[in-house]
Length: 387
Ligand SMILES: *Cc1c(COP(=O)(O)O)cnc(C)c1O
Image 1 (cartoon, helix red, strand yellow):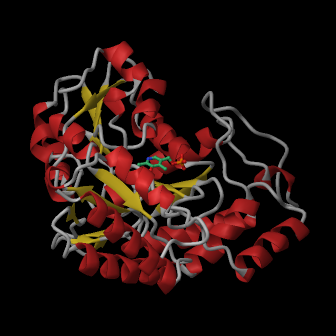
Image 2: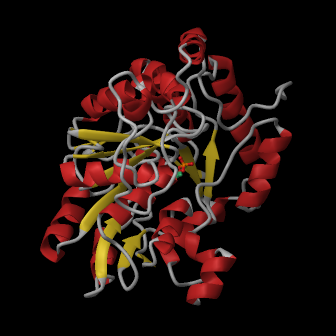
């Protein structure tokens, strides 16, 4: 039976405790970076097992400031994956360096370490592996390549809060790791991001650069023990987090295990149902992985269907099921085509998988009925259009 209401593909879990903490922040009269932001940084660092955490305005800012702090600039190359959100590549351009893509492993849709190795040149300065959907990349291999070639590893962990690689938390492995707390992500502050690192010099530089390059932030100037004096150490940015966002971060982090449990449960139900359908390929969770299940991406076996991915999405929409596609390969966007001369065929694995992927709704607020509705809708579309 057709669902009555449209089911969005992503909705955050905002509860009374989240709202109360934000109100507390508003009533405290301290709404920018202050005590709650500092507490959120400390708790987050402890959670992932990193020495330092710097809260910023977005994952994009976290990536950008990390690359700048690592000294990446004009003349350098940075290798990332074409199968990512464009922020992972745009921020390379903003340092003056050139983004270089290495094709993916079609199973996990993560960067293929062998392909990555082929792209290294004397100009290569850094690597940005992306843990797509919350499934970790092959980090041992990537860290080995980085050590051999003296490269900076900046993980894009926008999907990977909670992810583990061989039992180790993402956020405790690369030289720096960037997290996103955007509205659709597993832990939500509205807009927000975090860098984690064990490198004290890097952490200090990122923090200073996130607030104009000032030696003292507002908290350390305006509180009772503060001082009016500051110096500009770098031409910085305005990328700090606020206490209103950090209030949400604190309550969201406190309930992360529960939210992740709900995601895993839904993923398991999907896996057992969709695993029976030869028209679909379900997402893997390899033996080295603890998946964060940020996204549940099915791959259509197009040779068994009479319709393409775009039509499949339209059919699900008419069943009142919202979906998305993660991602349009970066090199196919007009700016990247025009600037770097990329064309179809340059990254065949990413392009082939792109034609097949659909992200289905997966979030803690989904009821058992919602999950069944998604399964039934997918079944009906397949029954209508199987070859
Ligand atoms: C969401 C996302 C980002 C950007 O995160 P913001 O916090 O919105 O800046 C970066 N990389 C990937 C892979 C993402 O999905």
